[in-house]
Length: 258
Image (cartoon, rainbow, N blue to C red):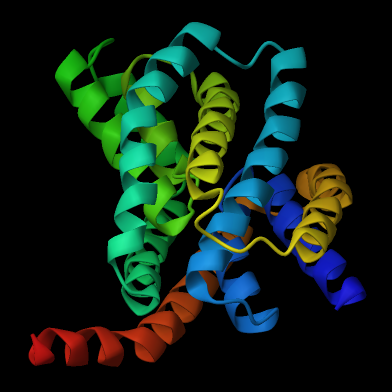
């Protein structure tokens, strides 16, 4: 278990370092399907791993001037209510439904990743310098609900939103990590006392992400980002299909019983 948890954390971190995002979406499936934890506990523990990893990444970007603290506070503050609500909502849905929703979110992440950040940046260049405040708050709340409900950071949604706010792509990535760190902390605190935390496996996975991020960041310059990103997107589609195959029958069966 020890070596497996560290190696899986390394995979998460390496994906984050290589791709600049997306790796943390592997955390819940790893806790459920490899380490064998129940879905609700896996979601809660994933928030700790994603949160710590995002803090490390955000500090690195902050040192390079790539974090807009004002925008992070605006987006993160708006997302707080959604994160709290999502974590509370999780108590009223089955673990199978949480995983089914997670599978759909993973498919959406794969679409964004397959398109690549160049498309997002190009859209940002054509967009006005500001979005309506109501739209910003609405998207932040939606990201927060997903974070609290299924344990995803939501960077694939946050980065495009920040670009459309007029933030440069480089700064959007760093700012997104700061927002994810905050959302994860809010979600994690909401699960305290309502989920079982296996602290040792959680710490081992988290510890593995740190050298993984460093290795992925180092290897970043030597690989084709477009090919890697699209290959990883296809990998996410396969995992999402497996998760939906495993959990949709239970969700549909419960719906018919009602």
